[in-house]
Length: 302
Image (tube, rainbow, N blue to C red; front, side, top):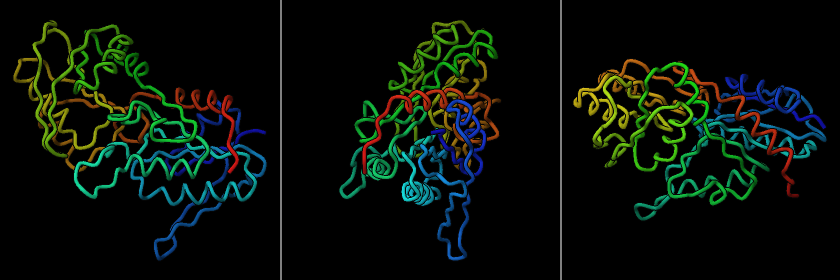
């Protein structure tokens, strides 16, 4: 049966990309809030007998998870053959250990909940730190998509003589992949994080010519403290003002101001999270990976 794609408000472009890649049909979804703040969900297009795809990024997750749960549960009650989630940004991956007594290990708890809610998951560049793969967190079939090729191609087309600058040791492989796709060298910073907005960055010796444009990359731009501090260090080293590229454009209050104050003149992000800085299209890659996953998975009975 032809897949049915329900796209959340604001994620219509993602829904269109999925419909085209899957040979599917857009489903009509009604979402609103009751006066008391509770969620109303209606699948206006009947899902009976069809694979259902929910297209919803998980930025601001607490505003969306109830709707995702209701939509998935309703799709099953109405006879959907399977229910999957395409979430270009996957929330609750950062808290992956208990640092203080009593803390929730959010990545594991959220992974258990979402694995019980949908049959499969596709996402882009999840924030894997202490986890080697999503399979350590999720018990359902998953597909992790990389933005490295799309970012590298964009840099090659738009930034002559670039120098890729990774934010920390964990980014070494990712920065290398982007640099390979862009056909340019890369370096990796040394970072120490003391708090959400307290980051210390050390710039290694730069052997590459000053004619190169530094391109700071990071998977998530939230407070932007890492990028802002790195931009300041580059300026102190006499380097040109950097271009900043992020995958997921979360942008906490004051983040853009911090970047501008550090001398950053331009910020470009992937469209995994809708934001005015979006300039790198990763939706076709996500949609293609979704089609590949749907063609191979066996949906467990619930």
